[in-house]
Image (cartoon, rainbow, N blue to C red; front, side, top):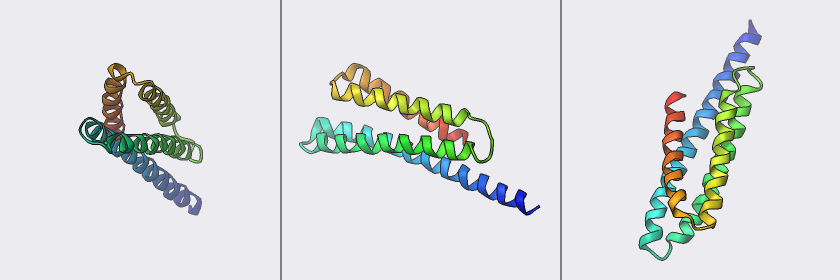
Length: 124
């Protein structure tokens, strides 16, 4: 009985951490859109967008960690791990496209990533 209660508490904590990681990722992607606007209109926009890219990438890595922690101890579905890993791949492509200055793909991919992140957040 005590083991079941502990397992349930751990599952809730892992799920909460996962939801927080997704929310943080969604927020950082939204802030990247804001900083992209500043990139076009201010002198400090490029610095802000560059720093934001690193933070967004870190948030994507945190999402993978949270998904693994939610899956492994509880023995649940590995689907969130696949979603988080796919997001990390998209974030990597996004960073490469940004560095290469390919806005024709970089911008639509950012919009897609924001939409997918909001969808992941709504599913949790």
